[in-house]
Length: 240
Image (cartoon, rainbow, N blue to C red; front, side, top):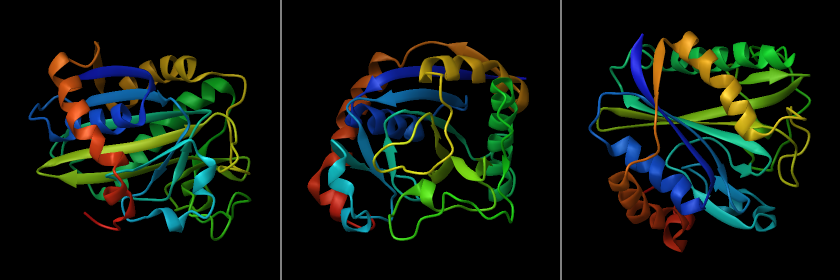
């Protein structure tokens, strides 16, 4: 077991949601940080290599950001977002890149079993949630995505920078106008789901969680960094 921080940030503004993750990515600490959060208002997050025109229905979301992690767009409503920030030489990420996804997703699958959900890595299975041309993360899949009911229910992406990793992921609780036809976890809210997953992630990932909110300095850094993620020039660039 190794110590890790556990941070919860409910109903975060788009700027705080992205700014705090960026602050944790750029931090110098060696302790992993696992963060659970939701967004307010509903927000579309574009993948790092996307721009608004890649998501034809992007105007149906109240706000929009562009993440520092890759993958497709996610409509952050009726879902739980998680992030992990850690050094690249942390045991979780000191392994081949695909294995780091598999380990995190397998740990989440163990937690979902407590809800009676039999989630598995997609592998070569065909999914009913696949939809071409939407630009949405949950309408495309990889063998390492977590699926149940023949639909994608968990997707994640990473950014590696300056010897550190930021791992973003999303668990859909319900469908939305943009995330249609995906696997969901009805009859549970984000807070309850996060608290259910906490001991499972600790056991499966070999972590001992130290609870506590983001520090004053982290929040100040998040406020400064967060403005970038909604700026028009950032949203329209394919790379930055």
